[in-house]
Image 1 (cartoon, rainbow, N blue to C red):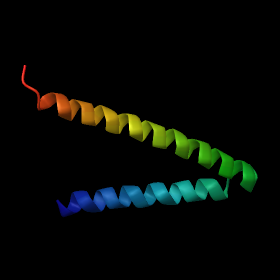
Image 2 (image 1 turned 90 degrees about the vertical axis):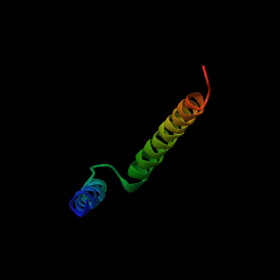
Image 3 (image 1 turned 60 degrees about the vertical axis):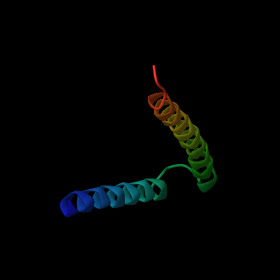
Image 4 (image 1 turned 30 degrees about the vertical axis):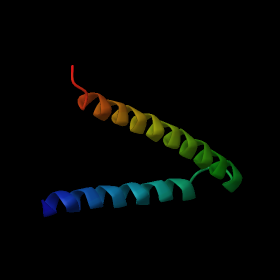
Length: 66
């Protein structure tokens, strides 16, 4: 189990380092990069909301009989 936790931690750190490097080396200006990040964050937030709603609906349906 500890090996699995270390793997996930390594993946998360690697993804964060890659994202930061990508932002720093991007050919866009800082303003353009901030706009892109803001737009994508909104998309991720919306998708997370959809997934949360879907999960709540599925959990609610499992508790019902017949």
